Length: 262
Length: 74
Image (tube, rainbow over the protein chains, first blue to last red):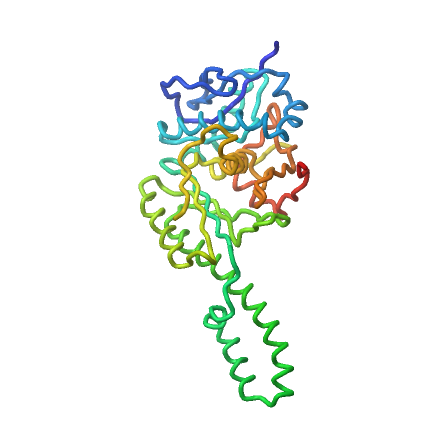
């Protein structure tokens, strides 16, 4: 059976550790040019390009392999001072080609390793669980308050017309205030994070978050970061809002390289 | 209280963590949905061989359009 070389991450140097990766194969090191790639052997029948792109759609196939990928990178991340974790499914024909990658991409890899050194990645999303009631929207909106006052002192005919405007304004103000909450959450976390990436929001989901961000945070700042997330949840409490936090992740979003291929 | 992601156990026991994991590992190939189903889009982002695409914010920042979600499993 032909095997291919699956690469999990690039580090400045090998770490002496016994880890098993996908299909419980031992993780070994390919070293070149002062960089080390953590790899293991995988069967070509699953990981060659065509079968891989088929199988990756099947969560029952992907699940255990994705967990193995993450487990390897989590171990390396905890033990190594800098790690560039690669996306699932980065596969080479043989060790020589991995060495070639380390050589070819060395400047970019070294730069990335420095950028993520002693840092981890976190994902924060803000969800709107329930629309806030009309009174709390009005409290936060001077424009709504002004229109309500105007209605109160208007003739019945004019008040009727203004009522319709009020409904439109309230809807617009809800959207505006929601966007503001998302911006404020990100702005406060940005003060602690070394880098922030706003994730594109899926358009067709049932529970679309107001905002979802990946954040690169120094390990030394983690306690402060988590405290700030808790403060944010306290400032925008349930049952209206919910903040979800996940991490610490190896820096998957922030650790990669520019795509330089054709 | 926010949920803190601590460790991954068996994928079937924690589907949301698995989705989140796939979201990290497959990058923009995966989106999370409220139904806890998965959408794999742009799986051609997974390459083989030397033309490797390494997950990177820079790549994403260069991409204006979020990947469209498709292939909802029924």
